[in-house]
Amino acid sequence: MRLVQYEIGSCKPKANLTAALAQVLDVTNIDSQIGLMYTLFTLEEVYGLTVSEADGEVCLKINNDKDKEALC
Image 1 (cartoon, rainbow, N blue to C red):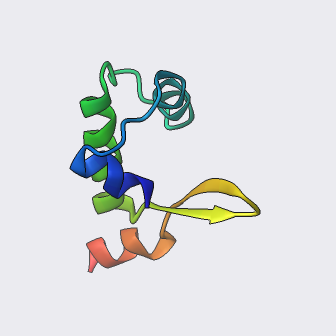
Image 2: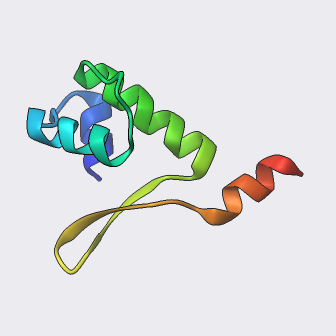
């Protein structure tokens, strides 16, 4: 997965991808690629964010049950 490549430093997200993700996620304090990664890790941990592919497009998915698990 691409996030793993970002994590290990073998690949870096392009500036336009970083900006697009910040806009979609309504995050205004992402001022670097490191900031983006911390945001994605937090979304993964808190909301079960996963990255997948559908019809040749990258998709971000939220696990709707993750919130319920955290409340138990």
